[in-house]
Image 1: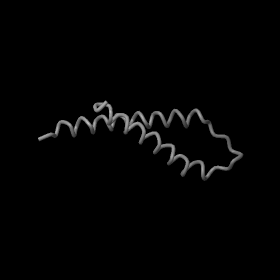
Image 2: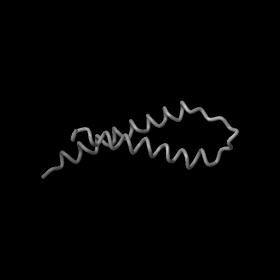
Image 3: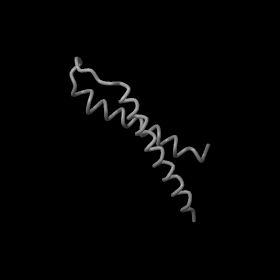
Length: 68
């Protein structure tokens, strides 16, 4: 589990961060009558989570190699 910690934390932070920013930027400014495609939001959230999982895995391997 230790080798997957960076991926898991990166995925969770990326996905929740995207959804939080989407709520603040998009949902607060749109009218309730406007229709938003929920599928696109979910796909974008998952892609954001995958990107941050990659970044988290990269950071984890980078800091593991820097042991003295």
